[in-house]
Image 1 (cartoon, rainbow, N blue to C red):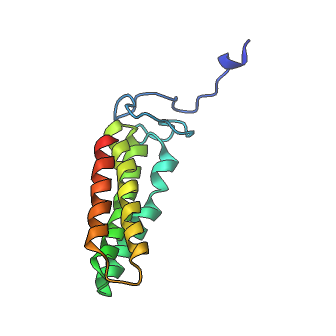
Image 2: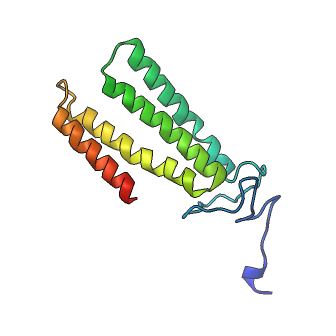
Length: 142
């Protein structure tokens, strides 16, 4: 019997349609799909986002509590959206959720870049405008 004919399939199978239907994403990670529940495609990839969601919430809370500049609130919101988007993507393996995983990563890195470059100043509206336009263009092309 050929090796490719022998396959161990615990409680679920790769590319099996779960509650969300067939996968429409352009990638499928190394975790087996729907092995723990029909509602979550990649269980451990999904729950691993809890830490990112909580750290994003904590960043927003801290930035508001200590009256940090708006850019730091935006950074926390970015982390929160990345965590939610990544959880949605790994839960569903749908293309729309993949975009909620990937696009906020780029946008949040642009916010982080702005925070880093303007660390010792109040910021620059020109830099903010340039990074915003870049983020919009990247999101449109992607």
